Image (cartoon, rainbow, N blue to C red; front, side, top):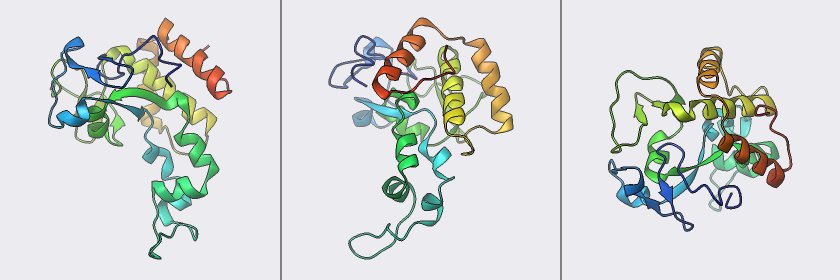
Length: 204
């Protein structure tokens, strides 16, 4: 992802600048840590579509697998097991089109919550325009289309994984229309296509 973001060192949810080593410049965007200042100092590669959202469709995630036993003989399941036994899960988890640089604290708080529109503008991260509450996330308007198209891409390339339900499909259609593809989104997609080797037909 270093090549993809070589001239765009900007975090996804908050629009903060970050250095080559991943350190975040809070002053560049008015970011104020909510609680975890250590994790807020660096970027992490956020899954726009959380691994949990598609991981639940894998039996190894839900039920485990005969191969998923630790050194003490105890069985495990979840993400670790799915990653071990399923090539498809590993491909989905590492799909670069689904990754964006995010401040670590925001990434942690976002967790596996679904995207939504929330009432009010409760800012918990200084000037960063992202609201996270009631197990839902409302991103700033300027990236909502990017998010919608990322969900569409994942749902199209990996069908049958329950990535987009009927209710959210309507929301994402509205977001994609209100926030059309811009120059940077298109540049990012084309760069990832060269690195990853597959076409993203959602962004022409």
